[in-house]
Image (cartoon, rainbow, N blue to C red; front, side, top):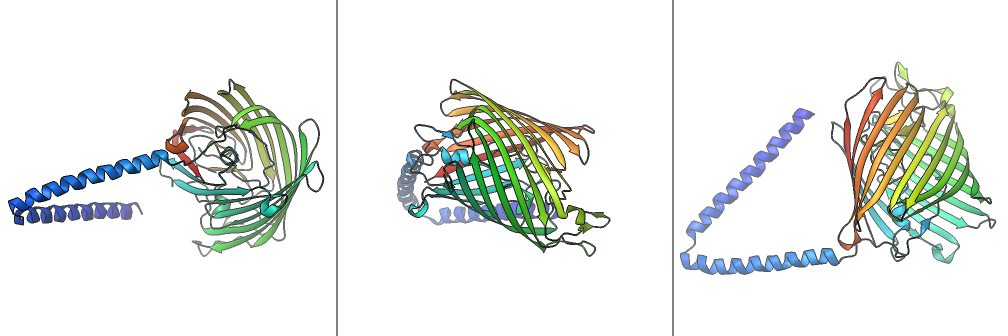
Length: 443
């Protein structure tokens, strides 16, 4: 494959060089055939053409400067924390909810670029929402991420004043179950021998108690469809099946967050546990290393997360997030995963590594972030991460990084992050570097 890419590269270089040589030769021949008086008149015309092009380019620059790409709320509001209704999901609500009220649709472009021999990940994301959809009391939102589309309907204060009811419909295709962003990234343990497609219907009822506490009940019905891609003769495909996943959430939520910088203050303790039931399941994979069979027909996933934030002068922000996540009788498809350098989507990240690089049975994770404004349009963030894998093997992983949020022309926000990570146990590995770039535009 590398040899073929090298041949394509040099073929492209040879092709471009040939075109340049032919173009220069043709130009020189044309110049020799033109009379001197005609050359002078052509020189005047070319000067006029150049000046016109300069004026046009200035006009384009002025347009880019004047164009309003993204506008934040003038009175930035604290965001209401919601229950994450799927057990692997990105959260970009801070970008959407911090936008000005007239902005209803947003496009986010994310790129995660590892420095080693891994595939880069590029994910276009489309977000839109509508309050009181069609004049009803239902809020509607739609999110398209890579190969995954999500429709969400929410009724606040329904069926009782202290409850919120949410319905979510998801269609996810190709490698969508492999990464949180719906794309097949450069993960070391990605399963690309077959396509994993699923549809999902999720209903959540959240009851809000006094003293910042709430309980949520979620019912997730998911239908999986697997399609062969590049399997050997001895490979056994996983079976199409229906997965029913009831789940309970309990949380204490006395935390506030606002703005696209996710300025956080307060404390939040949240936990959830779910019990998965497959209508059928047998062992699959390449012999003799099969994935769990009938034992994984029922499985458990659980998570406990503590988040604390200190905010000083609406600028300096120190945020600590600690999570323990695991399960019982999980196989490749339902196993917990973490990793990545996309630091503003509320994923389980370890800077320096690629998204979902680690797929394990149980892990604990600590993320520490400190952010401050250098000046009005430039903010800097510093990151430190530590992850401990309990099973299947014990591993210690460290990550660190630095990043900048820039407000460019027309209010366009741009995030740039460089992460450095390293595995320290069971043996030290070389440092890994990954860069992230992200921007968002709305209308």
